[in-house]
Amino acid sequence: MNETRVTIQEVCQQWLSMKKLVVKRSTYAKYESIVKKHILPELGDLELKRINSTLVNSFTARKLEGNEEGIGRLASKTVRDIGTALKSILKYGENEYHIGPLAGNTVLPKYKKETVEALTVQEAALIEAYLRLHQTEAKCAGLLLGMYTGMRLGELCALRWCDIDLQNQTIHVNHTMQRISEPDQERRL
Image (cartoon, rainbow, N blue to C red; front, side):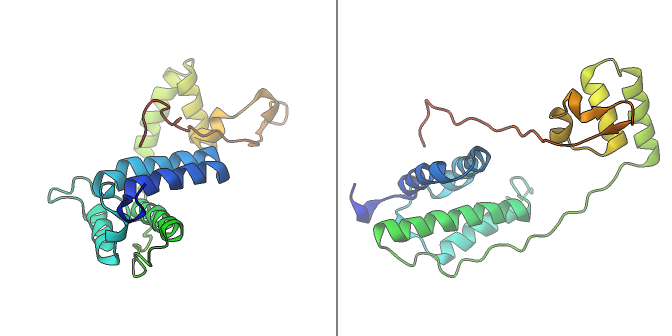
């Protein structure tokens, strides 16, 4: 490969291959998703040596703003995660191809914690009534248990009988479950 013509796509492939060896499967899946969904579609064909802070900051701004209709607008936390991965990819490219610094003045958006609106008492009562009516269905029983205990979905899914103490009426959260998308073996970046 001609080092002066290496593209962001090629650097992303190399970076992902390296990361696969050193991070957990869930972290790798997140990185792979960021690269495929966000970085490659906009930046993949660009040559590594053409990347600069202005280009990266403009990419970040587009992710935050979306288009005129607000479609494609991402949360600041998501854009920060994308930017962090991109900076790591660029740093890898700098070191691997002795180019750089590529985007030293890149800024990441400040993380703004979004407020979540809780259910009203009436909304919670409606949901509870429905779940109680259908509690013989496993998913409804699980949702009802989540409403009463505050357990997260991953905690509910990881429950085992040994975690439930019927005599003392307690549940011990000892594990959590996470869904991880498996990389498609057939498709390459």
